[in-house]
Image 1 (cartoon, rainbow, N blue to C red):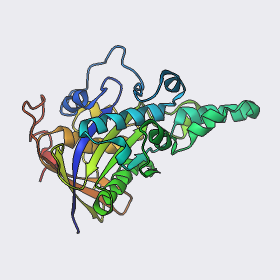
Image 2 (cartoon, rainbow, N blue to C red):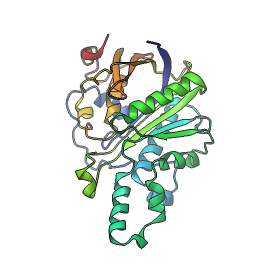
Image 3 (tube, rainbow, N blue to C red):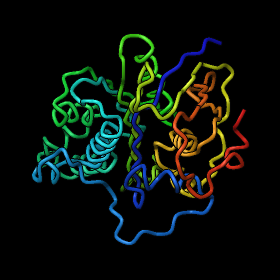
Image 4 (tube, rainbow, N blue to C red):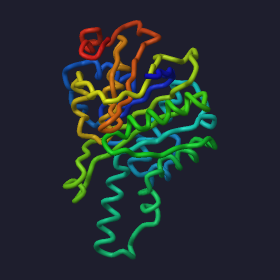
Length: 288
């Protein structure tokens, strides 16, 4: 099994009540579910868009742009220099539901803007404009394995021709009749800046390899992660739990019924004060 290495330079996480990594990291170490947050937003405010653009931005665009911005800010890198990989299991389900309802009632009322934003790579395209980035971007989906597939794509780019890559994943809730066929609940956005070489901004080393037969994903330890298991981007949660904890661990993210992405996560900068509940016992079931 050939192993490769990459480094995590920036981490972002957004869910209702967990608006950034500083809030999410302690919650992802705690077995208790987070307390309900009064007035928590359902989607973030994309700071790189003007007020008018924010009003028109669909949910996936708001989630992806803000998660990407936060990860880049943490890494200290320039957005215009960074190729990116955008992943979503389902795309923008609320917009797809609206388009289907309009087509079923009066197709002449179909909004060209909503149609444009229903395209799976809409967040990637709007990222290029909002971030003034001319770097290449990739948009992909792999249903319940979407984040793992995106992580593999970003890691491969780092291992071949890109010094650093931005990886962004997000999914929204099913609405209307789509709820009967696509069960995605809540909103979740995650992002990582991955680099080929260790820099002063690097917080973790990732050693990775492809493994067959696949490993089962590890059980989620935190109440915060367990509360998000019905979101389309839930396959990202084991990795972000591992990144929140100051202990090395190994886990597998299934890519298919035949193969998984094996990751060994090694913290490089132990936090001065460990968040409550973080420690070797938390990840004992997945630590080598």
